[in-house]
Image (cartoon, rainbow, N blue to C red):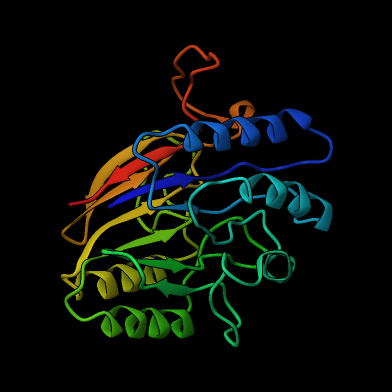
Length: 235
């Protein structure tokens, strides 16, 4: 199974280059051979959480040849995001968080809402952890991957290596993931630079920002071919 991940596009009405970056990203994903089975945008779709920003993002994401799903980052507005992408891209209603499982692929996709209102740092509260436990349990032994915006672990080499509100919240979230051996990996965004590591007995990957002007850390020279997404090929 092939999953393409997009993250941290930060669409902004005042920074038009980011809309162009997302358009090029969609073109790049659509040019993959083979195409991905699914695309996941792992948060910070917009920069201010404005209706107009989501309209720009939605127009571009709807050009994808593969089905796509979204989850919020710290710069997103949860309610506006839900309104903009209600339907196939957020396939769950009646829960106050953008958190759900997608079961119609060989590998289940479980999306976790880490948005914490009033803070740029992430959180998975007790209600979300209980819900995550249920989502993972419902899949039984079927392989799954988990997407969330904030990495619930330390990231070396950045000014503030820990990007969750509390150690307790992050550790409790990883405990939930670690109890389910069906989980093949954890994929995040947020830190605007790439990182591969292992947590809770599983591989974890953080991708860099899709917005080129917001990428951090050591950068390769940018060209028209610079990838604005990541591909996860799963056995």
